[in-house]
Length: 82
Image 1 (cartoon, helix red, strand yellow):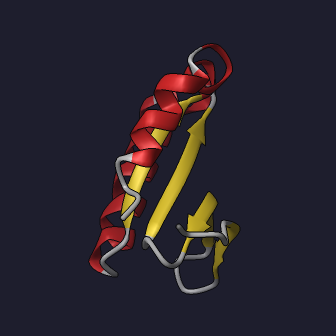
Image 2 (tube, rainbow, N blue to C red):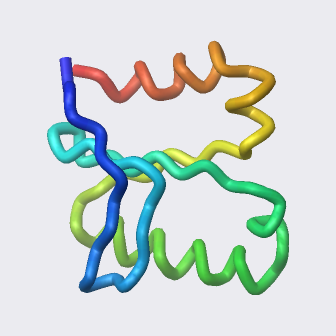
């Protein structure tokens, strides 16, 4: 079972993700209300394309999903476990 999840900070992308598990090559993003704005959605989409080019998967959760449906969010994450 993967044990290391760290904050993602990538100087190449000049951006960061909320959590990154290198073993699974998985970024987990927690999105607040700002991610509903058109400009931020475009930024997120472009950034996701760049990250995927490195063979990294991205799971996005709205903050509300994690706060109010933690079990469901956990199941989505478990689907990536070997």
